[in-house]
Amino acid sequence: MILIVAFVLGTGISFISILQRSVSLMHRLVEKISTFKIVRKERAERARKLVKQKQAKEAREEVGEITPPMVVEKPSAPTKKEAIVEQTAFEFLEAKKAFQFPPLSLLEAEVEKRQKIDRTA
Image (cartoon, rainbow, N blue to C red; front, top):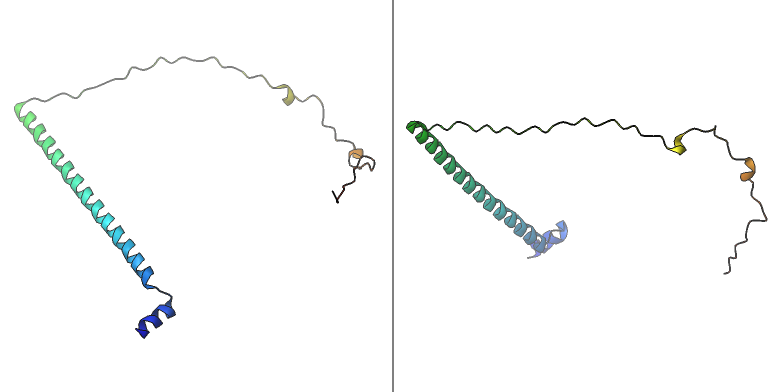
């Protein structure tokens, strides 16, 4: 008993975590096995269907009932050539005059226009 307690305290592995991981492992294993069974069942059904189709085809060929393949042509839609429409340029994109920088007086702050901040409010 002392060895088990020393192992748990020394490694940090608990009995509960081991149980949880083993249960999740078993759950995943059961899911994989059930998925594998379903896949095998579907493959067997598909193989049986293919065998039946081949037998039916061979029986028809022996009798002489060869059905010609169906050729279905889709009617082509008439192509209409649309007139090319030219887009007019927007007014704001047209260059009217050269760019003019704003005046430097804009950078100068006017003391009169500033409002004092009341920090006590």
